[in-house]
Length: 311
Ligand SMILES: Nc1ncnc2c1ncn2[C@@H]1O[C@H](COP(=O)(O)OP(=O)(O)OP(=O)(O)O)[C@@H](O)[C@H]1O
Ligand SMILES: [Mg+2]
Image 1 (cartoon, rainbow, N blue to C red):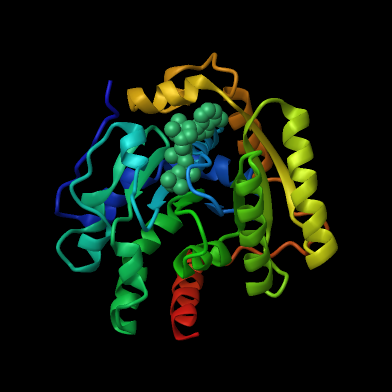
Image 2: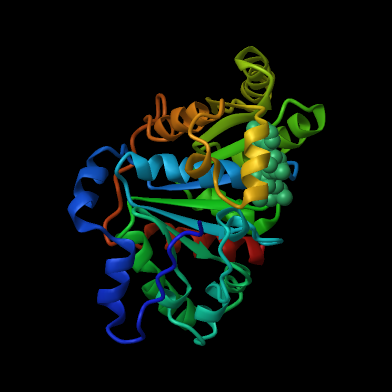
């Protein structure tokens, strides 16, 4: 069964959007569970390591904990969150940016507390528009940030400057690898780049996907994190693993996320555990105060994108 799609009317934009994105009754309960992490970017060095499946199933697991989640397809190449949910969006952020659609026209509500936003070309274009238009866009998008407990961004593999901008603007960057040597090497490169670009102030969590068992995942994580500490002085942390699971592949073929289609699959608990780990406070870090006003992530993002472009 396809998720419910709720196209909003064009009138009374603000009210409608709040209805779509926010369940006020539960939002306050959700917020209290959050320890400063409100925006999470999922990234990887190598492609095909499982970012989108992690983003989707972790978003569902967090929403099941009672928080309102917005999942933004920030893959600048081929977006596929919509495929994983079996929905067909006609419009994306690019249409909003060009003034052809309202933000409410592009949102898909795919669960009681989960909304997805197709990014399309819009995210790439954000960096190229003038500052007046950027301010207008921030104003539009700030609804998302104000009315959501957690924003999750599924990005594309590699070190595209906009991916780095997403990671640098997020409260937490979740770096995904598999046990393959190529994936390990590429994830180390991304970690290094992120660590150096932020002057050693990135909050990075590592996830090992497609692991045979927990021991294998821990040994992969040890290799990456001990090298990062030794050569970069980087204190990233291991968030956990997702076991190799044929049920994930089946769920992709069925276009129905694993957590909605097969609760008994072996990897389901992995996603649930990871959903909890995201909110654990960063070890030894000074906890950054939550910025008020709701536009903090977006401002940071646009600043990063614009700065990276100028470099
Ligand atoms: N734990 C797992 N066990 C088995 N197969 C998996 C697992 N995780 C992901 N896959 C499979 O790996 C493939 C790639 O997954 P996914 O699309 O999530 O990767 P990605 O990192 O988002 O890729 P891209 O870099 O192209 O965006 C899919 O076919 C998916 O079914
Ligand atoms: Mg993907």
